[in-house]
Length: 105
Ligand SMILES: [Zn+2]
Ligand SMILES: [Zn+2]
Image (cartoon, rainbow, N blue to C red; front, top):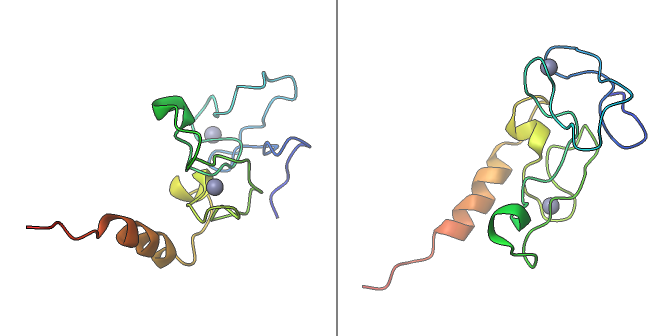
């Protein structure tokens, strides 16, 4: 069980155990010691890069969540190996189905 503040930020860094300051800014989302993320999110977030809102997700997730509950994309914590991913094949399988379109020649 990972302890978090009410806004889902972990109370201490999952990698180096540095306490998360309570008076942090809202966008201080990385540990100052080791740069690991302090809040777990869906990594399917393209809005900043492509302006595509339709198929991006990027919701905040529980700190234990390995996959997004909305779109099954791997979570930020799992992608950084901060939490254990017991079923890494699930991510590979979903990537596989997206990139395996046959090229017509
Ligand atoms: Zn850290
Ligand atoms: Zn998602």
